[in-house]
Image (cartoon, rainbow, N blue to C red; front, top):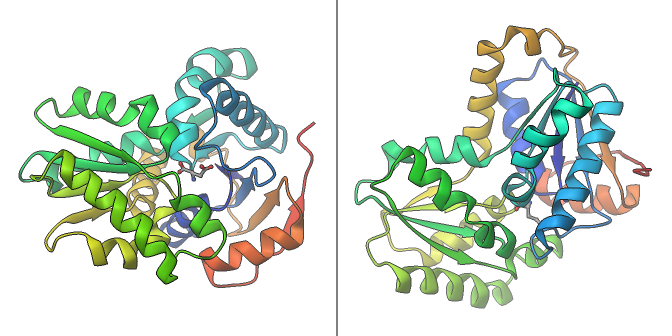
Length: 270
Ligand code: DGL
């Protein structure tokens, strides 16, 4: 099965697009809901939590794990790929969401001024500016941390009038940094749920980059280029949902993301 990991529910926005484009594969979604949010936690903590979840997915038989979480991709992916995978099993793969998102930017921005909206952890890591500089040295990036957006979504308050204050505030602060921005990366897998509100406060004509389809297309491409990994993936079109929190809580909140009933199973990581 292909493992899809997120700190909570945000990765469901990625899973949904992956399953739409690659419906034949089997997936295990693991949400570390008991320890979410990751976005305000330190580098070391995010790394240890993420590694534990990846190892769990490996134990469950996944050969390929997608970190469907920007914070985990920013703070843990590189160390896991370089330091842990050779020790655990060099034939397994862990991929993140930042690189494919950055690859998509080249064709999207005309002004070459890009904005990033993300969790404090992703912004502090500077992973986006670093990756963008590698691929597109001419692009200027401005980043705005939005610490309130994930709690608003997780509490199902994202479409309420109360959410307007925080969405407007962070978008205004982003444009105060750079008024020439024509493309904004929604650098957190929760943020697609805020799209209607974000659109309301962003000037017309601005490109909003949500990651689901980008990551799904990138995975499709990856599987085509890596038949040795593709062959390890089972293909019955199934999906299992695992949560470190209660099954009832997962079901209720997952509904906000997927608009359907989800039966999750609780797991302990140790
Ligand atoms: N889904 C995570 C991300 O994409 C954010 C949620 C969290 O803070 O744990 O960054």
